[in-house]
Amino acid sequence: MAKMLIDKGLSLIKSGSRVYVHGCGGIPQYLNCLLAKRANELRRVEIISILPLDNTYTDPKLKDSFFVNSLFASGFVRPCIADGTASYIPAFLNEMPRLFDENILPLDVALIQVSPPDKHGYCSLGIAVEVTGVAVRNAKKIFAQINRNMPRVHGDTFVHINQIDAYVEYDEPLIELDYSKEISDAERIIGKRVAELIDDGSTLQAGIGAIPDCVLKSLENHKDLSIASEMVSDGVMTLMEKGVVTNRYKKFHPGITTCTFILGTRKLYDFVNDNPKIFAFDVGITNDPTQICRNPKMCAINSALEVDLTGQVCAESLGVMHYSGVGGQVDFMRGAALSEKGKPILVLPSQTSKGISRIVNTLKEGAGVTTTRAHVHYIVTEYGVANLFGKNYQQRAKALIDIAHPDHRETLERAAHERFKTLY
Image 1 (tube, helix red, strand yellow):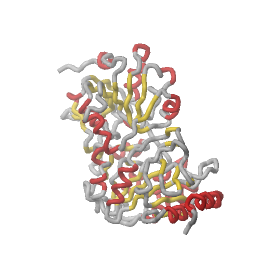
Image 2 (cartoon, rainbow, N blue to C red):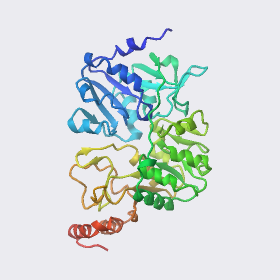
Image 3 (tube, helix red, strand yellow):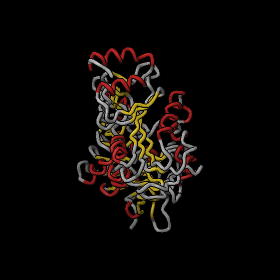
Image 4 (cartoon, helix red, strand yellow):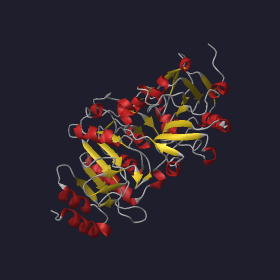
């Protein structure tokens, strides 16, 4: 059957339509531009995406045409959430597929980016599966950008050309992310401290950011590590190349590095292309705590913005200002806690670049509690490691003050004495 022309396909998107856009590094930039050219004809088209890494739909000039409902916010979306021209849908990553499968968010269209079809007609979603595969099976219409720069990744990535209602062939560089140029001394120290907590034979999940990247760089002398993560970065590639990651002991797809998206440099994208040792799965699989906990010595490494003296963690907002999202932090923190000899690990520098303590008496007003104090085990700063599991409020406060920046410890001690009456 002849394919619909892409212009005709995009013309089916009307004011009020709900459109899923391939997220993370899989964003179909050219396809987005084609839709944006119709902005004057459209009002309040709802865009659903995870970590949108281009600013097509957050351009202030298009605020009446498009409204972004982000499943995990990026730097482009944050100011729009703040001024009311975008919003955020709180959800655990492992539960996001239900939003489409159960018709909670019915999709009119999915805009995706894929590799060219193979001889059997199968294209690959490449470096970003997350909930895109779920969107493809639920959206009324599928429009694709076929890009020869998109790697062909194994796993739950394949979409047959016959599933696609209209496409455009357009090659452009994929979005890249490189944290190596932004690393501070505190982040390097934290990376080394976390590496000391990780035993040989452990299975790792490392979240997005400079500190998780530092952790991976500090693991090059470890042996027989495995990766069961939501994200694969350049740091994972390096450990695989050096033979540190063998995936020998993991229970979920032993011998294979598993993830739901891949984000890094072009070197990483070339490395994952047709690599049988890397599989990308639906986020409902990779982030399922019942799957995660099957892996022995599961170590989950995630970043925080702020931690209070009882162990409550905010990783998604700065007070009332939305910053990122719940993401997969709780999925992996819980999975690691239930794993045999597992270690849920949260990392943060002791203070901000402006010298404000990140360990606080109480979270800022309006801050989102991403990870509850009952979920928290290890907290790591450049000043040490606090294991809060099994500790009461007073003991937690003392352990956290001990790893706070020295400039803030006295103030924190006074606040803790006023709040808890004693420390021991």
